Image (cartoon, rainbow, N blue to C red; front, top):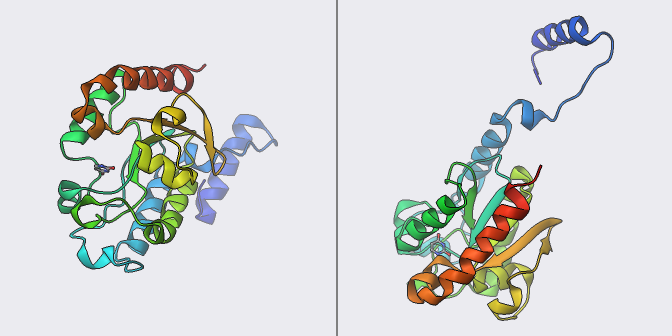
Length: 220
Ligand code: URA
């Protein structure tokens, strides 16, 4: 929607010509996809120098997230690793390459989805996130979700899933179920690094991705 009064007037004149006196209000992000992109960029600038926990002292780069700001699906990892910390981008290492292949198998590319982590900074030696770090970082994820408004979150691996669902269940209990996080559907699947370590997980992971495709991509 135009914010400039002159443009707004022009827009109203034009719609009056087309539709008469009825005004049809559209979803502003559907009409103008840059709304989400700008919102995310502004939010990145707001938080990228974060020092709320000690990871701010040891990180190389803040890893905000990447992908389509209007994505329907967000893939969520636990925290940046070494390569991600250097690049400032999530999932750029071997696990990321495998994730790209899994996405391609259901006709998705990184341009269709959004990828981020629960923690935005790398824990030293890739240790698990501490509850105090999650407490500080989770509001950043929540704000990203409210800007992007996805229909589905896919938690990659037990740590990402358990961290945000506040559970200690094993991964096999979490797969094949639809959870809700902040009102958004959430599915849990294997972390691609786990598939690299144990190729036996590739078959069930493929089943999870088929479920994502069938339930969230082939609708309508
Ligand atoms: N593992 C994750 O959970 N996230 C990344 O960004 C990379 C590896």
